Image 1 (tube, rainbow, N blue to C red):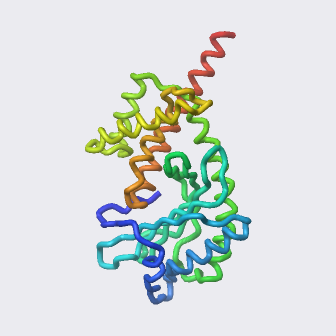
Image 2: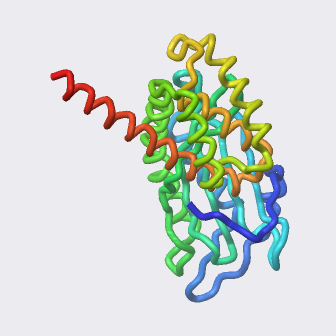
Image 3: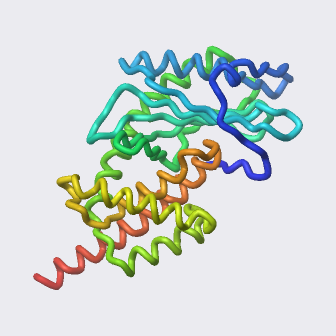
Length: 262
C-alpha cells in the first residue's frame, strides 16, 4: 500500500473528483481519468448484484497538480456479522502510483472502517491502457475483491477470540505508536475510544465485555474516521500487520498448550 507523504490531502465530495480533467496521453503514458475509473467500478459492482450506499473520497490538495491523486472507499449494500462490505481504490494521473483496489468492511455499530492492506493491482498507466481495458479490469478486480472481503470479515471476527490482559494491552499501545497506528498526541483519544469499544463489547455475546484484539482494533480504527483516506489506508496496513502478529502468536501458544496437555 502506498503512503503519499509530504502532500496535503483532504476528504472531498464526488463532484470534485469527477471534475478533475484527464491529462493528454503520450506515446508511453495513458492516464485514465478519475471519472472513467469511477464509472468502470460502478458497472463492475452492479454486475455482482450489489450497489453502493455511501461513497467517500480523498484527493491531494497541494503540489503542482492538485487532484492528481485520488483514494476512494465505497460502502456496499451487503452485510455480514454486523459489518457492511466496502471496497477501497487508489488512482493517480501523475505517474505516482498504479490503479489498484482493496477489500474492506465497515463496522456498523460504530462506523469504523477496516481496510485490507493488500491492493489488488489493476495495472500501470502504460500505452496499452484505455477506457475499454479499465472496464474489463474493473470487472475482474471486483470479483476478486468480493472474495477478499469475505476473508477479511472472517479475520475481523477472529480478533474477538484473542483476549488481552493489561500487560499485553500496554504492549499493544506501545507497538501501535511505534508502527504509526496510534499518534502519540492522540493517546488520550485512543483511551477514550477503547473505553467505548469495551462498553460496546459488554453486549456482544462473543466477547461478553472482555478486552480483546477486537476492542483494540476497533479503538484504532475509530480514530481514523476524520483522517484523509490516504492516511487511513497506510494506518490500516500497519494495524493489520500488528494484529496478524498477535493472532499468530496466540495460535502458536494455543498449539503448544495442546501439545503439553497431550
